[in-house]
Image 1: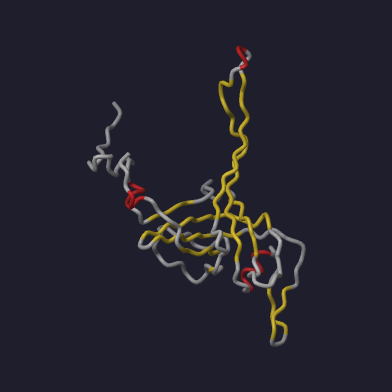
Image 2: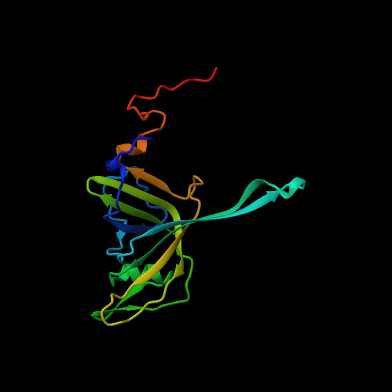
Length: 202
């Protein structure tokens, strides 16, 4: 693999969006999301973390007590971040199942015990003119951090979104405008920049 500095990407900015699960899924990284997708605004300086927690059981052979195989028994994908814009949609996301309502000229959130609130999510990640989009068709807030009210610090809503399989059995889809995503892949180009030629099996 050649050393190509332009293929080192940085998540300079972006935004997390959510929508009802029946909302049409995005099909690329660059098309603007329709109005049904709610943007959740600023995230804390820690950004958004994509995590994969795999549980693996080692299978040990009788002979020599040697590990001969590993069986993956569980695989959990999550997105986590702290939302720092104090807006109604963020409060509703943090308090699953609770809804914001008008209260005269003000607003009120009647907080209930957390209920199931599955949604679809999109995370846009931007590095200059390169765009990456992560689409989660079936996700839900499953963990919440503490809310701290403190002078000098933004009020933040820390959420962890667990990704469940969607109708196609996928946990997420990832799109990118970066040409490097096609490098070293059949139909892309090899390390010398020559096009790959597909070879059919006999």
